[in-house]
Length: 176
Image (cartoon, rainbow, N blue to C red):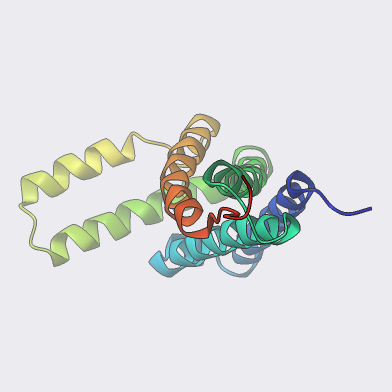
């Protein structure tokens, strides 16, 4: 039986979720400080984009080399939404239920990195103080914050998906 484009997107979404979850668990086990490095975010973003592009291209291949904009975007979106959702669920499980101390530690580290960055850019002391005060009141690893981050990241990655779909779409000019 030939796979459908939706089956392909769901499968790739599951693989994406497993990959992102593996990265999270690996860094959690090896060194928590790695989780707040800028390159980890870049690695995750790149991974999500690659899986989304692969999904749209595979769907195009399944459809005989032709796919409309909606089809390309839908396959991209299904893959990334599922993959990021699985990864978010794993992060919620780790930081809200399994090891809340790790979440507290990372929140402290985020404050330190924020302070160092602002001082490196010669931000006024009052701005640094106000920013740190506001940041200290936010729990970056609460369930609500992680779900909110999921929605915002999905919206951002979907904008990239629109560009990907516009590039990948291809119409069959032989159809009447």
